[in-house]
Image (cartoon, rainbow, N blue to C red; front, side, top):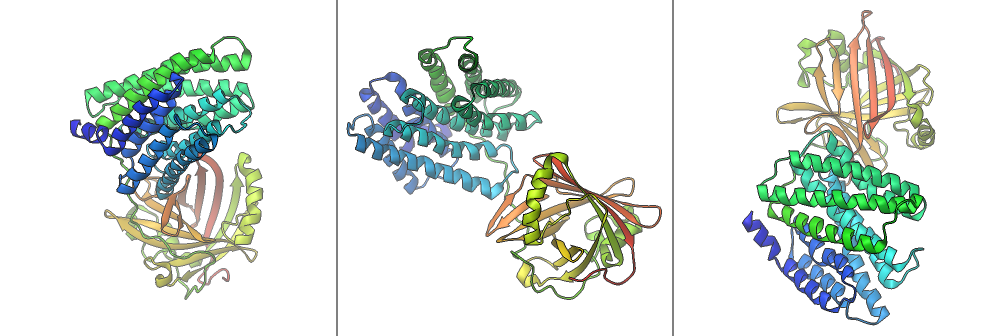
Length: 526
């Protein structure tokens, strides 16, 4: 811990930041302005050093940015100040780009890393408001409110989400995702409320308060690397718990005019606690022992086919050659095994049921899916026969093991093109399904499990590889989608299947299938 603290606090970037901050304090007329300067020169660079592998180019660019922030307090020329503020704006822009890059390397898969990504993106918003303040841009607010918004996005929208992300690397519970969602939405909701609807500002602060106090409770239940770190982090969160109450009173004053909390009071009390207790103490707490990320890289194969499928080869009898590769077939009825290995012998009748809340979006999406001839499901819930064929795909084009395309149609309209393959990770075999899209491919990695009642479950939810991803170029991005299939044998020798999909955990689609053996011939053309 001591070694890491010494390394971070005495790094070239941190020493330069402290030097420029002390120099700035000699030329700053209003002491409260130093709260933002402290974030720009010390707190933000310190936190970034815990997230980015610092190279020589990073050091030089950060020094240039720090010099620009310092010179703002001594350069009288408005043109010069605009140029200096623009340099800082570019710094925040590149931090935001790094946050975007982190996000697209992983996607919606890790609640601890998500606030770190979003926090880095929010910093650019803070940079924009700071530039507007220095350049005298008419934002519709007074210069002081513009400056307060800039400091809001440095502390509440950058430092706090980064701290929350580090905390998530140590703690995992059902409450944590709610806290993350509330805190990440808070800065934007408050800003919108201030601009357009004071009541929204008041409501969002209430939600924010509940999230912060939930975080304080979790922090006292979480084990940190050291007792000293636990003291610092808990103290920083308690400071937020105190200052947020006065933010509520200030928001109530804006919305209802019932309580009077002046900006001067907020600057002195709220600003001091956020800058010194939350900012300085919290940052030092994480610098003592920054928790490592638990995110692992995905190494499973991904289809290289993009756009429309071309060059489908000879016919294949089933979606898989041997279902036993995925699951113990002894626990399943023969009908389920036969369907997957001899799929061409079966007939599918589907009933599509969109959730009521999603139907307006489904109608909009229908036009796009019809043009793509992909994921082109009917809007009506009327039972509809789906004809299909299964064709081999050139493994050299696809890049995966023994791929085959399942092309489904409704009345000669292609509704679904899925290229089936498989891969093995740590002794378990997964279905690896690609749905070609323009310039990309949607990848579904499903794990198969036999249930006690003889049903087969295929799910994108599970530890490790399972999930739904978007592959574009070399980037694999996990989508906030999940799917769940359950297939059962019926007494008549057929099958039923239920396919459910969710977005951000909210159900939006259900497809019920009736599957019956219909003969040896393919039931439809490509």
